[in-house]
Image 1 (cartoon, rainbow, N blue to C red):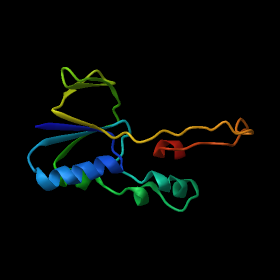
Image 2: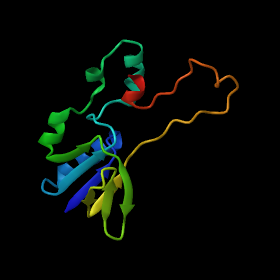
Image 3: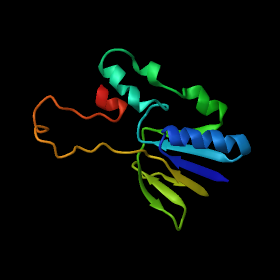
Image 4: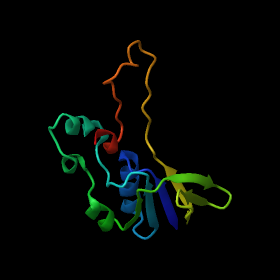
Length: 132
């Protein structure tokens, strides 16, 4: 069985841990647009304030993926899904087959219509690259 997870958030990590508790053999692949192991997005603020560096906000390092026998495709965006063929196309045109697909890409920031938000020096951040 080929299980593919799009996203590398807390939901994806929780899914991997639950799957591996009951299934040690199925192939699991995580596809993430970001090139990093799982990290805690709420703590990006600590990077911005200088209280932490990136290594302090990682909560599943690369050894986690190796230990759980997870194939990772980091730094590639999934651009389309063909449910009839059970394939995912990546931005580099590579196709990934799956039997089971979990989409756990998380949320997106929104900018509410508040007066003054069009001023300079107002930023939004959701990903580590936003804080760089």
